[in-house]
Structure formats: structure tokens, C-alpha cells
Image (tube, rainbow, N blue to C red; front, side, top):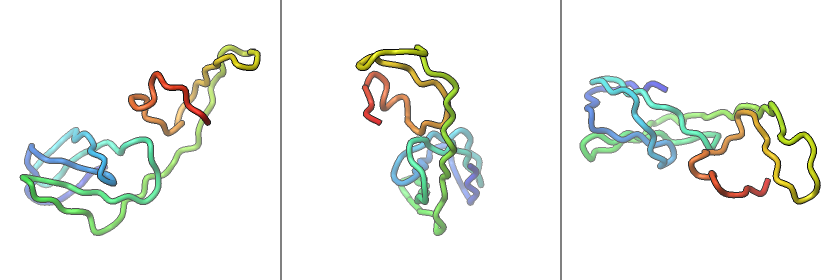
Length: 104
């Protein structure tokens, strides 16, 4: 996502619904950030530069991609076993859930 404005400095903070995101590139009139994972729908985007904050007047839409299952390992199991479901677009932030058993 590109945010275009005037006078962005190297010290800035971008948030999607109050969740800070990494700024990958900053210029005087443009910030490049990665859209966060883990939530979907209409969100507020805010930028803080030198302790002055502004929230975009328009909402930003994060769309959910359809989950893809590429494999299940092992291919057979008995009740109570743990299996691994591999794929993409599950919508979970691995840093938040790693090491925890999730109830789905």
C-alpha cells in the first residue's frame, strides 16, 4: 500500500486500526507499508510524524483471500492425534499463534 502526502520523514508510525505496521520505504511525500495480516474488513489508517497524528478521511478495505489447503499430514490418523494442515491464506499471524493449539 502506498500512502501519499507531504513531508514524511524517516521517523514515522503507520497504524491499521491501531495496529502498528512496518514502514518499508519513506520519502518526503510517500510511505510504503505492508498491509497487516490477521484481520479483514474496513479499517482506519493513521500516520504519526513527529508526534502529530492524522487518520485518513476514507476507510481502507482489507479483503480476505480464500484459504487454500495444499496437504494434510499425516494422511491418516486416529481420534486425538495432531495433524498438520498446510496451505495459504489462513489469516493467522504465525508470531501470535506459534506453539499454541488452536480451536477451529
